[in-house]
Image (cartoon, rainbow, N blue to C red; front, side):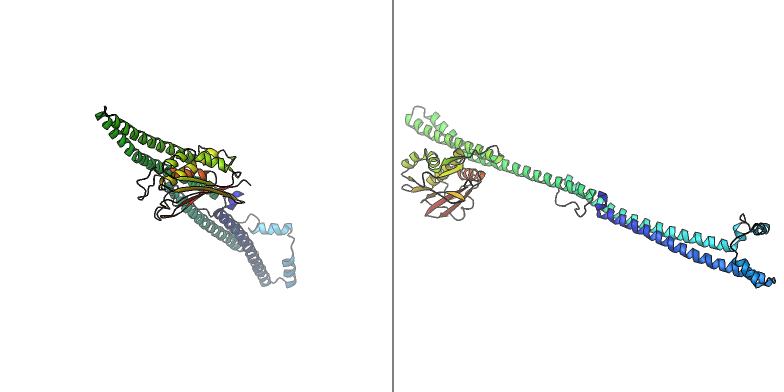
Length: 409
């Protein structure tokens, strides 16, 4: 009975039921008319017989008894047979019956033709509606095949046909999402390759130039030492670029599963800045730490430490000699907040909404270190563990990055 859930099929079924009821009602009315006609013909026939008998001088009482008699006798049947009006008599010999028969046939034929016309009209209307629906579905499916998902299949019914259309629509939605994901992945891959090529072009050109200089002056020890050091800087920059890109790619692909364990925030911070303290001393900068030494955080220590390290590196890159980088943390009932502040140059308002984009370098910081991947990597790590990262900055006064991690309830 699931077909009856289809609105068009339900309409057709109701139409057929109403047509059947109309046919039965017409037959009942026709039968009533035929009975009335038969009664009239019967009365007219009795009146004709009575008139004929009166003309022949038959007494009225005899005629009345004869007309009221309902039981035919053998003599009566024999008389009718003798005059050719028995059971086997032809219809034209009984004009009254012939007239009734013609009226009955004409009425039955009229009702049958009317019913046929009604059913044909209903089926034609249903077929046209169904054909239009099928044509619409065919056009939309053709668009789906050609990759156009702007139109949607009809979803106004509840029958099996519309259930099938709903399933097809869900399949089309999945295909559209898959196509969009593939297009996004291709675009991301194209942009990534372009960015990597652009980022590698500079250090590779520098390496080639340094190598030519060393070849031209192999006996000049000072020149060899100087440009060998520059070669090392370019190689480390390339290593940093490739390592960061591999990490971001692994995070994007979901191949990294964060292994969260409880750890003290102080230990996490000290491990993160372990290699940066020497750099800070060499650049005459100071890294300060403030916070409850026993406060714990549920996170992946390795990846979270790398996120903090990248933010501190960014702070060192944009802080002048004598600057201070402050790492502090505090806990609330719902989150643990780690803030990394500096009193450096700050971020220009036109750049602050773009600093987490990959390879983004502000025109105000082209002379600083880095390849533009540290902050995007930190953002991916923090958000991958259910946290959030935000930035607040003022030009000339410094910048504060805030990482918020949900506490273990």
